[in-house]
Length: 544
Ligand code: NAP
Image 1 (cartoon, rainbow, N blue to C red):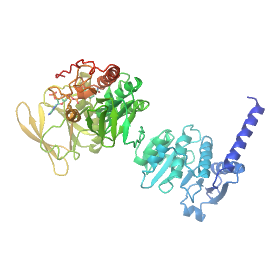
Image 2 (cartoon, helix red, strand yellow):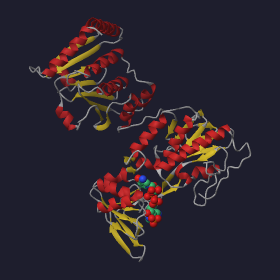
Image 3 (cartoon, rainbow, N blue to C red):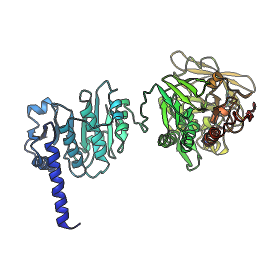
């Protein structure tokens, strides 16, 4: 492009911009506040940028005040420079000068305010409407950050969409290094809501609004679905590794699939501190792995979270009744996983959530500097004990035998971390009034009983399959209580399948994902050649 063409392009762009501003229904008041008698480089830049925009349109009403002006008191402005954009209608504040990449944000902000419409999509709006108390939002940005405008504009849109609850401040960290230090904003963009860090990096508007609503960082957005009846080919019950993988494989085979999960996606993996040796990762955070699987699944599958499957009626099609709606499906896959096993000792249930915990990742930080027991001798107990130690918790492992079940590699790290182990010991009782105060321990060899003062008891003694729904439907179980299947994930009921920990077996994430994939492929094949119509026996085995 030669200089003349580029000049014409720029002129065309400015003409278009003028026309766009002219078509806006609202005026755009912008007030610049500066310290009296101190026009630093930032104030000059802010003024220059605003005057340049002002040249384009008389819709922008640009005024300047100093920090002693009554408007500064009225809108609690105490930093120089500060820009307030349409402060009578919205709470949108800019601390610093909108230079570099930030001038893009300013232009979008002016257009959104002039339009008086946030421009947010239906999903983001549905989330924002749920906010029922004030949100004070700060987005830390810098002029050289190409990702910042997206996050900053999300914030502006939220302020325009819900002016009665959302107040937004865009903080230029170059101009306000003290604020950046106070919030430890060492990378941009970074977003706080009510002083809670809710997001790092540029995000979609849906994720931005969800983090604002929940006041926590969120990495996954699952669209709401209000339909009372969903017609689909396959309903997968459970959104753990087996269920999510089955969803991906089923959709890829052309089956319309819904994954229904009553709790958090990922099942046990979501609360596993570190997963070791899932192929592709020497180690990876459990929640990180789940987020990656769920994002992948969402590319194809509809996920219905926070919804419990209550029954499956054996009609044609199968009628799946959940706590929110009905599904009509040709097949149902039970990927309900397993739930943590209880010790079954006095005091355990009463003090659950008050010192007795089944999730080190969730509750560990509450016990920093205090002594807790970790009960169990498998990979989970050892991994979680190491995790607690890393959090600064004084952890003691309690195992009922004199040899750990965990892999040698983990046992070696446990020894290196100098975590003490009470061998041949089991917890006989957990004691305390408001919270755990002590435990009664029993030596499994000598029978000797001792009391030990502890602040918490973490339990990681394995998992029991979640088969309540399977039982209700009339699915056969093995002698060990797992779902019985024919080796190709078919249960005794035509059209009902199983995959993952609910089937028993190795209980590894990688085997669960493999079973999910295999089950989806069986379901696809059965839909083309239904074995129950050809009179073939699925050959369900009662032994796992
Ligand atoms: P697990 O391997 O079944 O081990 C359970 C442990 O709890 C055993 O040491 C068992 O003792 C003990 N135990 C069972 N009932 C008990 C009771 N009533 N009182 C006291 N102790 C009791 O379970 P897990 O450690 O949760 O592991 C489950 C699966 O996940 C395994 O396949 C494991 O390999 C896998 N996993 C993998 C990773 C990874 O990073 N790759 C991490 C965690 C878990 P005994 O030894 O005496 O039977």
